[in-house]
Image (tube, rainbow, N blue to C red; front, top):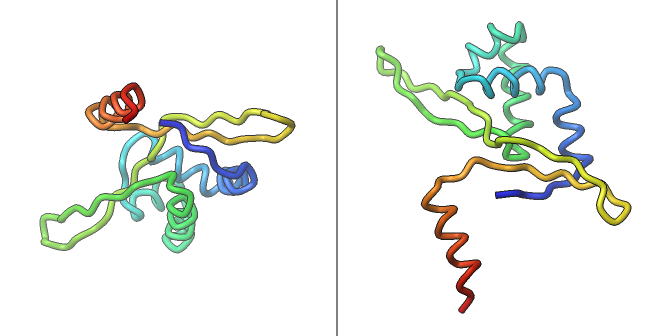
Length: 116
């Protein structure tokens, strides 16, 4: 599924070096904010600000896990497969290709092929 968003918003977000480092790290594997702070050599508040920024543009998702001691924490992961920037009708467009659940994609294709 492709989704178009404002090029300025996306470029501003991925133009931030800390946001890029966080995004690259969670693209490899889901991580908690604490793990991201350690891997990216950033302070925890900086990581949380970048997570908020990436979440604002739906570039990441989170899941809540339970630690052995019973405490809850979130892990973050990338929410897209690729990004394409194109020039269409003298205007730049950013298209985000998101991962999809195969049954959901099949249903969407079926609906598109069989309009009512």
